[in-house]
Length: 522
Image 1 (tube, rainbow, N blue to C red):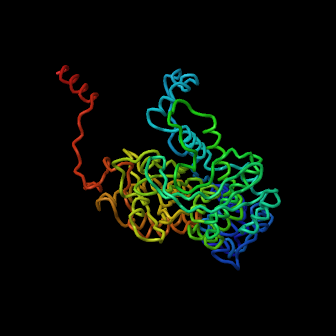
Image 2 (image 1 turned 30 degrees about the vertical axis):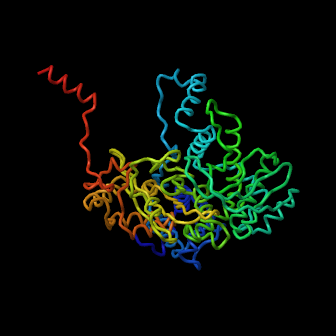
Image 3 (image 1 turned 90 degrees about the vertical axis):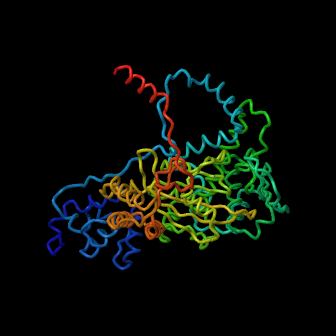
């Protein structure tokens, strides 16, 4: 439907439709205004003018309506028909991580029973109380989609939402809080991580109560990491009054720079849980201080979520990726930080993606087609984008991610990866997400696991990307899509990617039982 000079007479519901679409995609007025500026700076409306359009106090020109239609991926005439507000198919919040299941019988999971069973479980599996607490916190993060407004507000009050913050600005905050800085010198050294593997470690900094921050001079040549450590210690002062009950800042080594684990794992120590939670709070505060939500969200929009955009503002790619998951209006993110040969040191799964391997132990049959595995083997510092169909039993899901091979402050090579679940974005545009996933999956299966994305699927994904504005997803569309799975032993390819012949499945006891019953009936 073309818009003509008399279109104002048909615009009864125009403002309400724009508002419903914007809200359905979790965009603020600032987000929509900025997206319009990226497409056509001269025509783009201000935030106040957009608000007046949505409330019916102003009518957009035909040119502005065409711009809004392009950004929101609707035909201009759609805004002018006689139907009232649209129904937007927006996927609701998921629990993230591992989906919860009903547990029966309930008495087995009583508080008293768990108090007895959990220490025994940790002891038999060699899991420290600190590791277990970190696992619980990660699950809590995922259930809340990494949204912690109280910590965001605390950081914004201290930093005034200034973005970017330089070292000098952070030192001014340190002085304002009556904190003192002392420097020490320590070179990286070899230590053992939680799995017992030797890895280079850098002892970066620590907080000594009541108000002294000790910093390693090695950070003087790494200003982005220096800023992060300062922000963490500022967070400890603001949130916990600098009582010193949190971990030292270290690179690699034990999980979360934790204290040396107890040799006898007979109980979950309250101190382990306290330290794990304090570390989480301080690191989240640091991210919110260095990347305040609204300014950083606008920065991501301007840079199309580039993982290397941190170079412009003195931030590490790792922090850029982790803050994407917390400030993006899109909820369905995951983040991995992987060390060779296959150790996950950080995990976030707000979109429920299964783990390609465990972060407490390595598995013998990981799927080699995950982007993080590929990047661990590549000798390149360029980001790599990938579209993947994750096949798990009868369920298939569509993910896009970007991985980057980088080095930590101790010089260890590792891979960081941020990704999204594309299905909710496709559903919000009214597309058949399951059909698109099957279309891409079928193409991959016909080509033994990897294939060019069919044009129809590509077109519909690109339409959704107009709103998401995540540039590396579009880059991934230019590469062949791959089938990935939680384990290579369940690989759906005709020729398993692990190179091992597919073993004949042995009959299970229930199947034998059914056979016997059938024989008896005959």
